[in-house]
Amino acid sequence: MPRHDIPDSHAPTVAAPPVSHANFSIGDIVRHRVFDFRGVIFDVDPVFANSDEWYEAIPEQIRPKKDQPFYHLLAENRESSYVAYVSQQNLVPDDSDEPVDHPGIAGLFTGLEDGRYRLKHQHRH
Image (tube, rainbow, N blue to C red; front, side, top):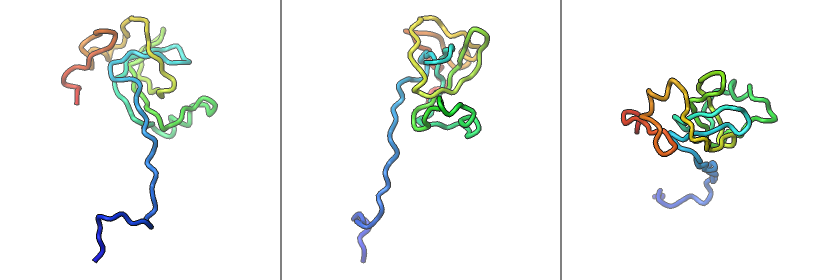
């Protein structure tokens, strides 16, 4: 009778995908490394989780790799507020100490405290 608790030395090994670590957390204020906008993080995907159409619309020479965290931001620039989806490689901490002026903040966060936004209790896991 075969023993199922002993690994089969003939079974193919499957390499695990690289583990990426998020450098930022929900509530952090960040700035885009290249484009002139900033925002507050309200969700994190451990790897790319948007549509292929969205990804392919990014010019190939600046297209980020998919195997890194991507962040959902309540973003702002000088003209408007919007939601952005940005790769980790394109974000840097925002050190301006200025609040983010986005209408969605009040629905998700209690306010700015010690340089980051605090998530409302009902949105915590």
